[in-house]
Length: 537
Image (cartoon, rainbow, N blue to C red):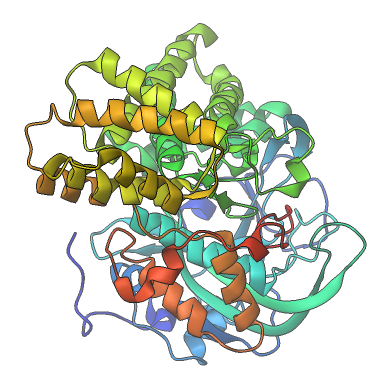
């Protein structure tokens, strides 16, 4: 991917926006922001609501360069645009209409209640990217909300979008984080403790923000022409390699959505990411991670862990449930687009594509994390499957376990003496707590793994380098994000800036930042924001 030089880049206020979504799909143009049902349309034209004193808090240099943009100063025309205070003539802002299943229940019309898209920019490689402001004020889909976002949730979304990108996880991106100068009242845990918080706006970027729910609402209201029109738009713009839309192409399109979704979920499971709220309206039609709300990262390896307090009753979206939930969500999408195909049964093989892609991708990613190459697939599969319960039985930090294993296992290949003592030391460094029986189970697995690793032909150094590329040292642990939020709320951006820099190279050692790779401190185990969050987060 070639990147424009600084002299070729432009200020945001001088670029021209395209508006394919508005120009090719059916929209409501009244500009009425009153919350209401909007049948018959894909979107509503809206304009952002101005804020008091916007200033730039953070900017993604890499994404800005890719979009051909110069970094704006802290205040000025570009930041006014990123806050929703200024529009340029080429913009046609809109809020999309969609529905969705929330925690398994059909919720009817939802839509962009606090997000609005400004239009599309052309990147330096000729691809187009939609720019969307989150927190820019009310839209017809806001229901009883104010359309705003607070600094804590906006900072979390900005940081995690970019952290996930640098980890190699399919994701939407974040271009900027802007403070609004306004206060926004939020009840973080829905427990009657509402308080004013500083407001902020994130500029999110993706090829499209179309979700499963955009199609679901059209089926629910019987809008077959709109359903076909939206499918054709997505295929022509985002899946052109499939050819002109037709019943056969719709089937291949669904297969590709299933494949991409499987790859995304495999990446989540590989790095211990928990989305927290996998409603169908939070599922991208491109297989990208979208809507960073009450997400979290596994610290103790726990299949039942969810960071979302709203989900504590059923743990529908817990870490171990994410592969199954994605499958269920794909089934809802298949039902939504079924009127486009001659026989709904033609869509069923795509679900097998999901299952097979997920299984194959997860297997290959685990081999890489363990420094193994494909040899005996059944034996390797059994080895990998035995690791999960062994980790889950003890309080082992997932990220630290795999990162330290990247050093310890190759060292034991080269110097096998005192193997058990070195393995015990390794486990103690990765564990929060561990009973003797739990340690014995993991030791047994590790010895079995080392026997398998000795069958590899690569040198210990080559194995180590490969494992380090597959096992990040740094992830956006919730307590780190919370520390950055608390500092930013006082005007101190040093922790935000430090995290931004470190998370750009999460696989590098960066020894000067070792404390950012440490186990979660005890004080963060139960602290709000550091351990658990709600859907308002």
